[in-house]
Length: 138
Image 1 (tube, rainbow, N blue to C red):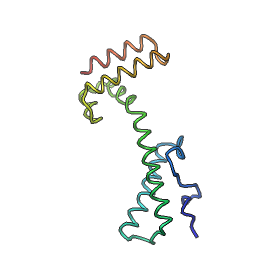
Image 2: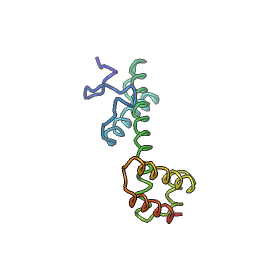
Image 3: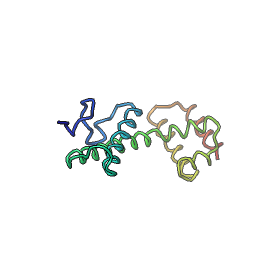
Image 4: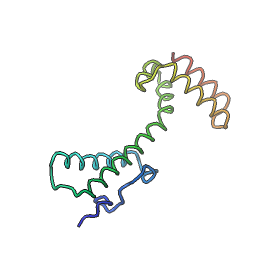
């Protein structure tokens, strides 16, 4: 009999985002899609039906993977915005891709640059370069 708390490869299904912390993003997305696929198949009567326990375990795993993926995306969004600006993408285009107004993106990038300078993660010259990049992208 299958253990609903483990994946087909014997790994425990996550019950919270921290269970997959440190796993490669591609692995998290693969697992999310696999678990979501099981739920979709169950919902539409495709394949063998799930027990109530199995259904619950797959649903919790989907939620945990989704939260972990969302957290990763949020962690990288400002670095990715800065990378896009560095590549010559306009501030308005970056903001549109993020679903935000440019004034909000620019404000957060300045805040992040200030924090990085304050904690010694970037030099004064790098800080000035970032501010110039942000100012020139509007």
